[in-house]
Length: 282
Image (tube, rainbow, N blue to C red; front, side, top):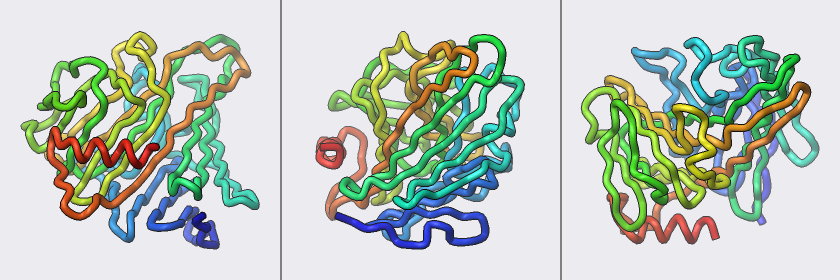
């Protein structure tokens, strides 16, 4: 059993879950974003912004579909959240209501010390007078020098599809193979989306949803690479569902961050990479 390194509050507005080789940082003052994810000191997230979007940093949450006007609703994406930490080290954050979506978002982050994983729970509460329909959407920005893969549910689509291939029952996407900007939409089958950068791997585990449960014009799994390839968005979505006035819906994602075993090549179609993910999720 691992233990949490204290304090959780590291000052300068940063709350940290640090245990084993995992370092997970949240900044409540910036939309309760995940602003650092390290494995044995190696950063996996993109934290510098980009020419096409200065706030393209860390991991955030949006309601889906993207029917709201750009930029994303500030109360959900970037404004300050209130935050508290309980005696077990669980971080709970609460955003402000957003009029355009009628939603108020809360985020809860906790360490699973048995599995060396971070559990992220997103809650959407309908603060308006009428029923609304949304899906939860997690957007994680990472260097565009890696490799994404997931169990194939259906072939990827999109008006600007990123180059991808199918092998070993999985879909593989190396952003470097796409010229310029690209966006991929796909249905998964196994309840996870993985992205490997160098010899570090992030696995995002969630409840698998059928393609029919996706929000209009969206998908369970999405990838976006910006024009100059300074970042890629590794995205997963939950079920599109009605939320009655006053009702709250919750969605859970579990993150595992690992170093690849020595000799394991992060290449498309490598069955050993799939086996390593399966072993991690056992």
